[in-house]
Image (tube, rainbow, N blue to C red; front, side, top):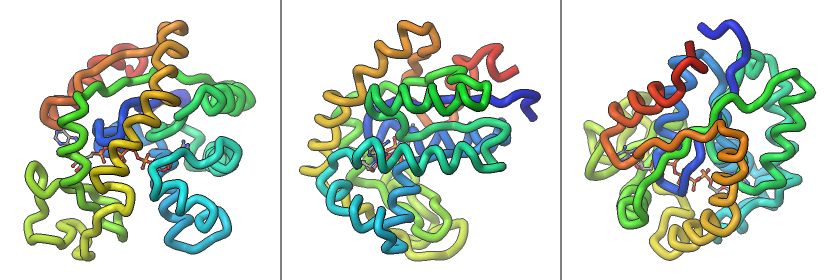
Length: 222
Ligand code: AP5
């Protein structure tokens, strides 16, 4: 249990394991997992006006406009569940988003405590994403080769049928990697200049990545 709010960003390219590790960190520190990708997919599934607006952009692997994502984030940050802090997964993705997060946290007398950068080579990222399947009901994530469910196509946790994301095809993933390099990778300098960036090798087994992330957090998580 943390005694003050803890705000942690997981930064990294598509498929680096942000979602996998963010869930574990959120559970370990009893803080809120904020995945803007999951929030957007939820809006798409519900057919809200935001979902309708975002769907095509996401399926092309492009970024949803900062303003739309920013509104969604602000709502989550002001919720009671965010009072003890958050693990941000997939946010920020642009410098404008990083500045918005700084502003929102400052209104709450908080700041980004640490930015954990998961580094993984492109070839491994492609293999991970094109083999990924996930549960639309409970959000569990699998990989057909490295983390398969016990019964093919069925979620271990809740029994729902697993699906592949619409944006997980080879061509779209390559586009998402380009978008990451152009718009999101510059954030490494943004946070490095503040001395809150920690790089962790994301290419080892998930348990080991988790151990290293916690180690990289050092006293921040004490
Ligand atoms: P989003 O959902 O955020 O996707 P992403 O950042 O591209 O990341 P992924 O979810 O693909 O990968 P991940 O790093 O979470 O990896 P995972 O743990 O699943 O965004 C989707 C879209 O929404 C964007 O393209 C954009 O359109 C829009 N969007 C979202 N946020 C936005 C924002 N802030 N601004 C604007 N637009 C936004 O793991 C991947 C696979 O690898 C899984 O199969 C997993 O089982 C496996 N795996 C994980 N760790 C390991 C390991 N250590 N070893 C082996 N396999 C592993």
